[in-house]
Image (cartoon, rainbow, N blue to C red):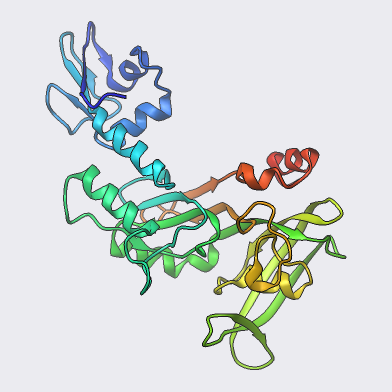
Length: 303
């Protein structure tokens, strides 16, 4: 991909979105809309254009390919933007990447990578994203950021009403095909999370077995609460630790990563109130751990 902007001249009157799709670039409708949302398209040098901007014959349409390059660079760091608007950003985080900075790691985090990308995209150092929730470093999948403090406040206030769904591959097959796990959890000074009889914070996880293969099972998990290491601790206590989770007792690690993925996220948009729903498929490395028929059933969705 080159870094030079691409210019096209309209031959007749046409709406901008339709024109972009008609260009010999192979753009899908979604890709064309993304270019407009990222302000990567100008008409006669004007950046404030919409999908329904009317082109006149001879109008020059410029596509800033450098912004496409920035998006590719973002994905090379493992972070993929799933949705972006003026209030929220939904990303797909890879395993091994912190959600936000710690004492040991401040630079290579989902928060910092996304922030740097959006500053360059919007051409302003004032651009900033705000954490709504976190994923463990070892967990992959969907993560939500707010793009201003008011949106963050609304999202966090209503976070208990959001749907947070995960998929995990565990050692063994649970005796019950579905159930609810309830525990009081507390973090120790060694940063391990433990179940306790008194004190701690209530953790509730609903699980459903999607398929079993003797020594391993694919589970769907829906969080009612969001405590640190919640799913990992509760599944270990059930006697079925997540594959690759040496911290909480797993004996196997065939994928060389924690087999936990945030696969579904539903929430109300903090400005419009519209229902937002996003899904992320189980990564190929984890998909390879389960039987083909189970993977197919998982892809179809819950029955």
